[in-house]
Length: 572
Image 1 (cartoon, rainbow, N blue to C red):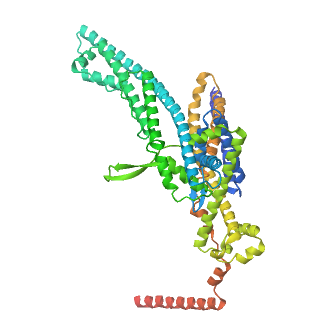
Image 2 (image 1 turned 30 degrees about the vertical axis):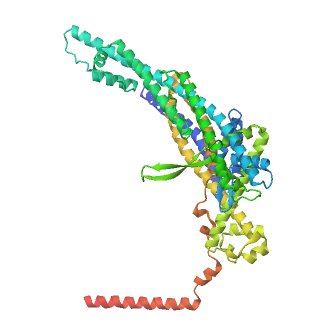
Image 3 (image 1 turned 180 degrees about the vertical axis):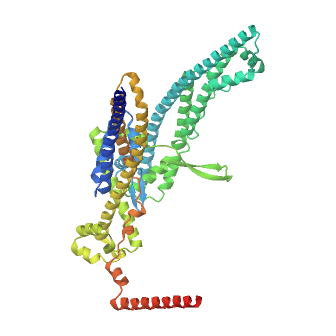
């Protein structure tokens, strides 16, 4: 029997170890795949194909998602991925800015006059403002509806919690009566404690006078009904204040909350009053921008004062758009007690860009976005190349002092003869086509290193978060056995879903950071400087110098030994 018992125990332990290994195999497979991708990011020389694949997959996913929602959301996402970049004469507009610029260029034509340009911009501003207002009204309606749904949900929860309090109070009163009938001592119910208990349950600061507090402690139904009404009124007032605050912040002070009294819980009347106030706010803003005050026309006139008919650059177009979309007002700083000027957004063009995208076919839209991405990548390479070349000139780094792989690429691009002529020349003396070719190579190398850094950081951070999630899943998965399901099978299914989401999160993180990440100082070419032969020659000693130094070293050593012997003799 002892042998049979030992066999059963050992068999059970073996099954446990086998079961643990089956769980570990799931994570080991995923770990191998992630580590393979991470190793490729470390050792692969050119990551452009991988980056393009991630970018293309993300674009297709968002284009598919945009079929079910407004196009301005797609434009806003593209602007967040690649915002406008301006550096030392190189300007990369965002996608929405590029679309609007192309639309305006078709309207104004080539080298427009000041009057025609001003009129066209004002007309564009009015159309964009109308589109924004139309979308804004829809957003406000959804905001009110969402608040109504949230109010009803919270009201139901608090009312249910309050009924738990009522049941508890009735049980206490019943126990008190039974104790009194049996002549047992009972602690009295203090009205203040009962009211505080009710507030704790319903999460509402109830207000009752002393007489009603006493009746509440006795379980009076009329007082309980009054508290139920206070729950509804308090929660409704909170939601109304919050709604007015959100809308007021969105409309930058043009919105005034409805003055009329609205019955508690009457969301239909509230919605009608708020939407009427929002409409008045948009009308007031339209009068400020394009009506009697004509703020936009005044600002554009000042901006175009020195304009002469010419073809505007992308940067000049964007500066005019900023003049229209941003305003300034005088504010009071509470800390310094001084007047200050603050910039605020008075109109947004993202909704107008969304309207432009609505008229495009899916294939045409994908082509335009992809071309914009490629232009942005090219512009990023130009900026990185300029930054690296500027640092090279500052440190007077010659081509022969660069790493061998960079020299090889420059030699291949320029040719053996040209490279031999300029490899030891100061970079300050290199100009023209050789300089542009070198900057292009440096920009491409630096961009590749930035993408490598973004990819590695995304994989590492997302993998750490994933390990936390998978550990939580492993701990909780045993509960599936109560539902007559195999925990291991369910674990494999959910782990596969989490791993798919992990890959999506890595891709999303890379795409969101690839256009805004900047190179570290350690990536620049000057940080990888190697000593040239001339430097080695200067530091190399001649044979005669080496012999002299050796004799000097021996002489110093003999003198030191002699002094030590003299000291020993003196001690003796």
